[in-house]
Length: 125
Image 1 (cartoon, helix red, strand yellow):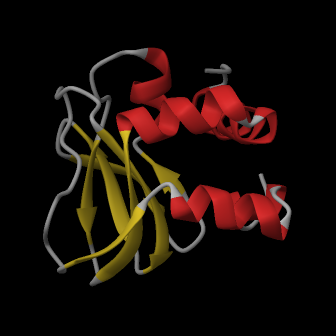
Image 2 (image 1 turned 180 degrees about the vertical axis):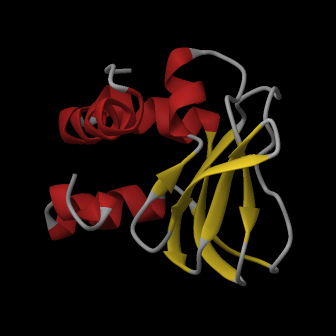
């Protein structure tokens, strides 16, 4: 995948995607997504680093430009991992409805989600 989730989009598409969400700050140590919970939100990380954990074990670290929480929304499944802020975070928060709407209305957004899923899980969403 590209260095940033946004690399796949035109400036106009980035503006549309960003406008569909809300900019939020999350303190170090907080966990905005929890394993085995319903998928009700996703985030694009603008600043900071998160630890991705399954069963309490770190499986990856993600940072600026990465999207998190999208797969469970698109797949209508429970979360497969938790994320924990290793540093203070600035992110764009998307509701599940916003992710689904963007995926339905923007083929490029849907394709970018599939690319992330293929890279992370070996299967498209």
